[in-house]
Image 1 (cartoon, rainbow, N blue to C red):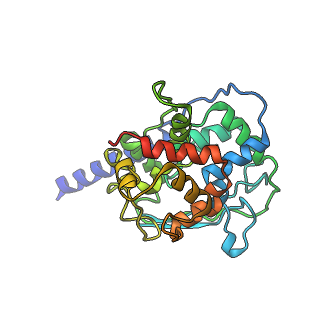
Image 2 (spheres, rainbow, N blue to C red):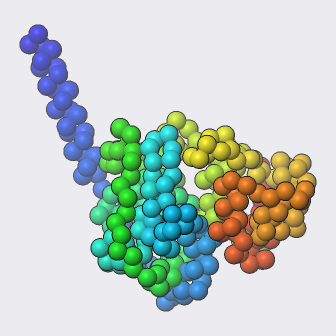
Length: 297
């Protein structure tokens, strides 16, 4: 009995050491931006492309733009998007542009805490310093909303935020954008949009038991979206087999209307309504070009 008690005490002590170690485990890198003065118009365009407004606005319940509160139910619990207005207490009004860059590209909060990967920062790591400066300039124009962010409703053990540091160590890939010099400007622009701000792979790639994207199946589609829906494969061969061309895909991303006259529904309908419908024709063509000319994994 005494041995069992000693073993139990030792196990608790080790667990305490592990928890303490996770708490003090530093994450994130120092930010030093090399950018010109941010352009709010470019930033607003990028915010549409990146889904910031759609995800951080609870429009159905009359929420103010970027005031947060949108719920995202998942198998791990329900995420609530935070307030991104300029309110200094409940929003990001007291942040610096460096705080913003660290959050967006590294997934690390102003206090040094890891963000849940429902926030697609692995894709946003491809944003340039100038992109960050432009986005920051755009966010500075958002009126403050004095409304606290809703707490995340995560199941045990996912409510232990420090445990995300282990998830990051196992699964996080933060990549900068690398153009392919052998490809056209349009193809590379499409690659940047798809793999970066538009984060298409967040919905069109299946995830493993831990909620991490299965990189070997990127853009193969998913049978388990957070809302219970499914997403199709958007690999080049599959798109071509279904009759997609650069022209009709770009048109569908602008209007939501597919070649057969049907309209996108569900999550994709929202993506078009709140995001891609605002993009320029050149960018829509670039997205379609990349997806249809991309080498299949």
